[in-house]
Each structure stands twice: as C-alpha cells, then as structure tokens.
Length: 559
Image 1 (cartoon, helix red, strand yellow):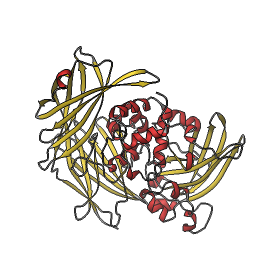
Image 2: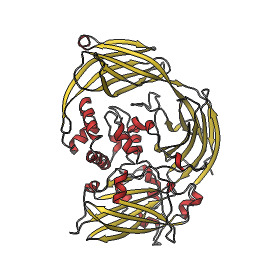
Image 3: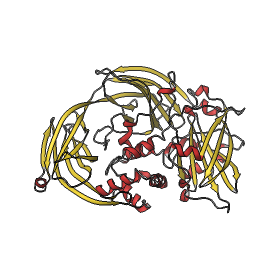
Image 4: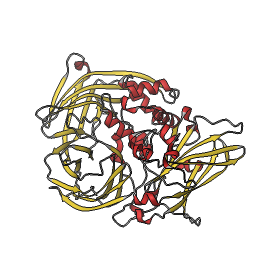
C-alpha cells in the first residue's frame, strides 16, 4: 500500500470505509511515521471537530507513540521519586484511536484531545502578562494567531481576557528565518507559535515534514530550555522525552510547540516571577544550523491566578483499594483533580467519579474503565468535560492521576462523587464455530451468563505495498451481558489446526436497556494467514460493575 492521501483519511474519520478497510488502514498507519504525521496534521485542520465521528480499530503501537507525547506531571502533594516516574501504558490503549462508528463525539473529542494534544487548540486557556509592552490587554489579542487557529472553549477565558503575548522575535541562520510570533503561558505550561521563511523569503508550508512526532528525533530538531533571569538552566523531570507539537495555519505553515512548566517545578510557589524561554531550532529539513530565540516571561500574575485547594480525603473499597483525593488546583479555564490510588495485592479494581453541583447535576465525569465504545445516554462509563489526563506510577501498586476538566464553574461549591467501581474477574469461556454451518444460521453460546451470537464471517484480501497480500476477516457478534457485567476481555482465536490468529479488535455499539442490561453489537476483526474451516473463540475475563458507592467530598471553590 502506498502512503495515504487526504481523501482516504477523510473517509476513515467520517466512517465511510468498511470495517476491513479501516482495519487495513490502521495497520498501515501504525507502521508508517509519515502517515502518522499526516493523520495528526489532518486532524489539526478540522475547524469544527464537534461535527465528526472517528472510526477505526485500536492499534497499540500507534496509540502508545501518541501517548508518550503526554507530559510527565510532577507530584504536587508528595515527595518526588525520579526513578518511579513513568506512564501506565496499558491503561491508555483503547482510549485514543479506538473510537468506533456511532461513538458519541464527546468521547471521540476526549480521545483526540488526550492523545493528539488539542489538535488546533492549546490544552487550556492560559495567560501571560505584558513582557515588553504596556498596551491595553484588548489590543494585545487583536489578530491573535491563538485566537485565529486555536479558537475553542478551552481558550475562551484566556482569549477574552487578553492573556496572549505577541512576541515577533526572529533568528536567522544560512538565509533561513525562524519567526516566533506569539506565546501564552500559565503556571502549567508555555506554548509557542512560530513560522519559518526559506532563503527565497517564502513561508515554508507542510512543516509537519520537518518536525517529527517521535520523541528521540524531535530533540534532534528543536529544544526548549527554561532559565532564570541570570541564565541558569532549570532541570526538568521529563523522563519520557516529552514532545508536543501541532501544525496550524493554511497548509501547515505554522507550528505550535508546548513545554510544560510542571516538569520543572513541583509546586506553583517554586516558580519564579520571571523566566526566560530559550527556543533552539537545530535542523530545518536537511539543513542543520542554529536558530535560537530568547523569550522573557513574567509569570507573577499567572501565579496569583492559581488556586490550590488541599483535600486529603480517603476511601477504601471492599477489595482493599485506597483512593485518596489529594487536592484540586484551579487555573484560568481549567480545574485539576489529583487522585492517588493504592491497590491491594492482585487487585484490578477501577473507579468512576463525577463532579456535580448543588443540584446534583453532573458537570464532569471520568472513568478508569476504558471501553471501545462509551454511551453517555446509556449510562455506560463516559468521559465528560475532560481536557487532559495523566498517570504517574509512584510505587508498587501506587500511582497518581492528574485529571484536568475544562471550564468548570469556580464561583460555586462542587462535589466529588465516587459513583461506581469495576473489577476484572477471570473466567473460562470457549466457543467453537464451524464456518460452513455459520453460513446457514447464526450460532449462539451462553458463557458465564453472557449470551453471544456469532454470524456472517467474511474474509477480504487486501494489498499492502510493504507486506504484499494479506487476509483480513470479520465476524459479526451480538452479546447480551449477564447482570452487572460491563465488558468481556482477553479475546483470542485459533483455527482447526490450533494456529493462533491476531484478533485485532472488537468494534461496535453498546446500549443499556431499562433493566440495566448491557448489549454489545458489532464485529470481531482478525488478521489471517489462510481462511479457517473452524474458529475457536475465547475470552479470558469479564468486567463487573459495583454501583451506589457512597463517597462524596465537598470541593469548596466559592471564594
């Protein structure tokens, strides 16, 4: 298969490709760094993502590459252990590209926001006080690139209040000019918008070709340093090679880079009032050079606008997992929950919580449980009003979640409510399917109280330029889950000769009926060496839901 073009990406995102074609496309994307950049860039061109649905089976490798771009987050409320700071990769696999057809756009938006940054938007509304000018704030925001290319509700407060700094600083080397146009910052991060002009004085387009998303390669192209007013360099705690960039403007003519201050300072009070941001571009296309711009930042006003509310309330589940709500941090446009979990030996319990107002209306929600398709209307675990989430493993069976919500009201008291918990139960379930008999009638099997109906096994031969001809298959699956069961996990398949198949994914819909029973309807996707005569399908665990968890914590935001 040759690399993808824009029309294919558009069809993929709009769900007009068949399931097998989507599987094939994702399989190509996960191995092709160019198409990964194309996909990320194309997502960045979508002016109104609320009108889109994203389709496609999950790919662990691609998702993990995107996940690694999420910034490591310092622990505000406990001693940092550098050797223990790491991502929790398995937790994120199905939360990014695994957005299936008819998935609520709220969930699709969350996935895209979480793993591709915010596409055309900085991750939150932030601000910076005037650095080199005493012009009124409203004059500073006129014609802002952040406003033009990154206009979203996440930036609404920052843009409205004029917290955007025009910089217009340049660095020239070998006839090429790097033009840093604007920055914005708060106590969490600094974002920079820049453009590049070639030796002919022409603005360079499609700059995603020159700024790799791979962490190791990115640091060969550009570097951001944070220094004090005397030039002393602050050492960050970024152990994952953080690389967050987005292409903006017509034809990708602008780049937005992000450097999280939270990887340098463990607490807002440690951030000095004045900083210097040193941006160095080391290579543009194949041309190596030195393009360095120093940007002074006065962050004193941003520090005053940051409020930390200590909570330190704990809940212990019947299985022994301890949840500790550490603190709430409020900055312009965002509210962050810091939640520590300490699990008992062998425990795989996960939680879901909501943020509600005084009338018990749900303003935000978050769940550890990841489903391939979530339906808010059906009361299936959902992510609502989420801007960003981060996990740090801080010890054996212990970790901290940093969950950032967008535009929660700060003029009223809210309540953190632990609504449900989920446990993974190992089970034995094996179903033997005769492919020839399946052509005449569906096959139904009841396993552990779950009723599974299989039908319509299809095989399609597709051509991948790098691998030649390959077979992809799908099997229709309709499931009625047993009471309190949320999901089936650990799918695997073999043929009549015990040859294992790569079971790529389950894609489909979930609904919850009036009795609370969840039904799944969709397809299992396989990658085959040869068409089977018989399929042996297994799943190894099921997810159980425990409702009516009684743990509520007041969040006193009202001043």
